[in-house]
Structures are given as C-alpha cells and as structure tokens.
Amino acid sequence: MCGLSGEINHDGQPADAHAVERMTQALAPRGPDGSGVVVRGPVALGHRRLKIIDLSEKAQQPMIDPELGITLVFNGCIYNYPQLRKELQDLGYRFFSDGDTEVIIKAWKAWGQACVERFKGMFAFVLHERDTGRTVMARDRFGIKPLYLAQKGKRLRFASTLPALLAAGDVDTRIDPVGLHHYMTFHAVVPPPHTLLQGVKKFPPATLRIYEADGTFRDRVYWTADMTRHAEDARLTANDWRDQVLEALREAVKRRMVADVPVGVLLSGGVDSSLIVGLLAEMGQKDLMTFSVGFEAANGEQGDEFVYSDLIANHYGTNHHQIFVPHTRLMEALPPTIAAMSEPMVSYDNVGFFLLSQEVSKHVKVVQSGQGADEIFAGYHWYPPLQNTSDPVDTYAQAFFDRSHETLKTQLNGAYMADVDVSRALVEAHFAQPGAATAVDKALRLDSQIMLADDPVKRVDNMTMAWGLEARVPFLDHDLVELAGRIPPEHKLSQGGKGVLKEAARLVIPSEVIDRKKGYFPVPALKYIQGPYLEMVRETLTNQAARDRGLFNKTYLDGLFADPTNRLTPLRGSELWQVAVLEMWMQSHGL
Image (cartoon, rainbow, N blue to C red):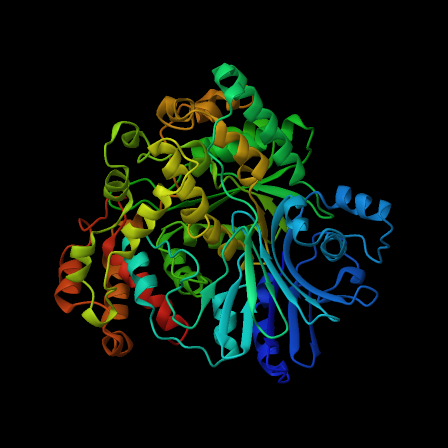
C-alpha cells in the first residue's frame, strides 16, 4: 500500500517542500486515497495513501505521534500487527488509530532496532525522531517494498520509486557502468546499492539504517537466508517436509488475508497461484475473486494458459475474470507499462501484470500472488545442473547470464563499459559466503536475496501499484522461507523442480495443474519481434535521443534488426527487446 517520499538536510538547511510535493505527486498512482506532506525545518516527509487497513483518517500519513516525538511514513503491511499491538498495549502504550502504521511507531519506541525482527510482512519505512534528530530507514527481508535514495552533499532524498526522485530534480542522471553491466549481463537484475543512474541508489532489503543528525549513519542487516541444516532434520522424511511446508504455507496465506477490504488472487493457472486459491477455499473463503490474463498468439506460440486457470476457477467456484489482450491493446499498453517501471525490466510479462492490474483494480484493492516459489523451492531449470558441477559459478553464469563480459565489450560503447566483470564477481562473492553447503543452496540463496527482489518482486510491485493495487506474496513469508532453507536440495529438485511443494499441493488442488509443463505469462509478440513491434524498437534505438546517448555499437544493433527472432539469450529472452526496453525507459523519463 502507498508510496513515501522525503528530504532531510543534515546541515540544518530548510527542506525543499516543493521538491517533496513533486515527489509525492509522482507517487499518486500508488496511493489514490489520500496524500500528505509534513515539513519541519530540515525535514520534510510526504505520503500517498492506499486505504487497506484502518480506513479512517486516524491512520493518515505522514503519521505524527506528538507524545513520542516520532513522525513516520510507511509503505507495506505488517500482517501480525494485531498481536504486536496487544503486546505494546500490555507494555502501557496507548493507540489513537487501529491499523499497522502506528504499531511501527510504538514498536520502535519499545524495542528499538529489534522491532523489525518482530514484523511479519512487507515494508519500507522512514521514521524521524523529533528529540534526537535521528532518521531511521528499514526495508523488509525480501525487498518486496522498494526504497530509493538520492544523496547530494548533506541533502538526502528518498522515495518509493526512482521516477519520483527524478520529479524532485537535481539528480545525477549519468549512467552507472556497474548498473549497466548488471542489466546487460545479470538478466536485467541490478543489485543494491546500484541503479542505472549514478545519482540514485537502492536501499538494500533486510537492512535497518540509522542516520544521526549530522548525516553519519550505520547499517544493520537484521536477516539473511539461512541454508544451514539442523542435526534433527536428517530424521525427517519426504512426507514430513511436505506436511511442514503445507502447514507453513497455510499460515502464510492466512496472514495475508488481514485487511479491511476484500482480497483477491492473481491466478495464472500454475501450481503456485492455484495452491493459494485452494488453501483459501479450504479456509472457507467465499466469493473469492480470481483474475487471469492471456495474449494473442504469435510466431506459432500460444499466448495464454486459460485452460489451467479456468480449471481451478471452475473447481473452486471462484468469481473469475479472464482478460484477453489482442495485439492492438498490447502495443498501446507498452509506453505506460515502461513508464511505470522504477527501473527497466526485461521480462515480457511486465505488460501482462500491468494490464491485469488495471482490470483487477476495478474490483479489489488487494491480491495474493504466487511470486517467489521458484526461487525458494528450486523451480528453475538452472538448479539441477548445479548438483554435480565442479565449478558452480560458471555453471550458474552459463545458464543465467545473458552474455559474457567479453561479448558485452563488443556490444556496448566503450565509454559505458565497466572495467571488470562485476556481475561474475558478484556471483562469486555470494557463492563464497558461509552458510550454504551445496551449489544448489548457494544459487537458491543468491536468487532469493538478490535476483528475486530486482526481478519478479519489483515487477509485481511496480505493475500493481501503477493502478493502486497491493500485491501480497505468501511464498515470501520468512517463516516459510526459513523452513525451505533447511530442506535438502533433492526434495526440492524432484519432479522437475519444486518437488516438495508439488507434493504438498497434491493434498489440496487437482493434479492436472501440478503435472503440467512449467509455464509463464507468455507474450509471444515481444519474444518474436516482428512487424509493428520491430518498427517501434528500431525507431526507439535509432532516434536522436538514442544516437546522442550512444549506448550501443551500431554494428550490434544492425545485427539485431536483421535477425530479431533468433537473437535470444540463454534464458530465451530477446536481445533486441532487452536493449529496446532500456532505451525506451530512459526516453520515457526524459533522461
């Protein structure tokens, strides 16, 4: 829910209220139900509200607690806030509202830095203490809710989206060669603190930062994905793991129903979203609204999986909404989809989520979605080869990286090229960390801590919040993830991946959606760029703005234009689409 923004001047200069107003207005789609800006000397905080919990004005933000001297802006949802509220009341704290926002304020006062460890949910928040001048920032364990920073001298600005920071002005928009290398190599994943712009940084997940009044700060990483197995785990059978997973997922789905408005489900027809629907039905959820999207076929490839989503919707009698997108609507939706991205994202299904969210937002404000299951339960094709490799880093890179460092040198303008292979170095560093015994564990930890936040999770946040829709992801419940980390890889890799999850699903949903071939949101027209799509990307990559920027070598682009259909990355993504999205994103934000 919501979007936050602000400016803090650590030299005592007055905050620029107009800049914060511009940032807050840029966040309007994330929070269509209310707005507010509070300015106090060197501090200004802005907020756009999406009313999900405590629909009254008592829960408006920025929230000020005059008794405790704390002002807060918050984006997300603390699912266990009723339990925490009771604990805090027992400690003597008095509440003036009924939602989760005020719980964060009191929790900080009561438990300090340890408060984030008690939160079960998704969140990014910034909290300012009146009496000490300190500012506290935190982001949830998986980076489900975003937070971007722009530091210039003693002035710090922050916002829920990168374009909101651009709206404030005075941002160094030169391209960061490290961020660009990751985008072109690590399948458009740009890990924190980098973005594509030198003047904007990304606040890392699972981190709490305390700024003192003079601007000095210290970070605390309060959670990491633990892949360590306990001695007692060796006695557990496959059925034991199955039952524990099902119980943990049941609790995760139940937690994410906390709301003062109806909650729907994005139903792709895959095992993950189907299992969410099945568990909600099992809990007695009535009149559940479900939503699916499909696209027109292209190049002989089917563009929808309605047969499976319809099967689940009919089986459970949901109030189902099926959205079909013809080529004409897809083309029209691409510019606003790209404009809605905080950073350029190469996955074809961005436009699927964008159009789906547009329709869903007409019916509900909150949905549950199945992202994260593949990264937690080993559903991707690059995990099995890691079982028997002697070089895990190389095996991972061969499967996941879009191109090698040497190849990238021939494609990028040298002025934008990173000096060293920063993407491979990042994988090497993560794989070298202790706490993951096998190569599969190392890859799962990397993907769940890095790739997940800056690909599937960011995609869902950006595209749903573009329409004032909150997406909740039960597979990223940290209790469930901690359990999954202990499960031996062979149980996750069985049955073509996600074996233990599929076994849990067999106790709940029809087997037809479990034993099917793995699917995605297929958008064939963007994979096989032809006709008007080819004309569109050619114009984008050859217009004056692109020529002035000069990101890519002309020879490389000419080769892509000549054979767009067959120039695919190891992950079967279009190279032409990848470079076009980057340039379209830059141009859409006037960069």
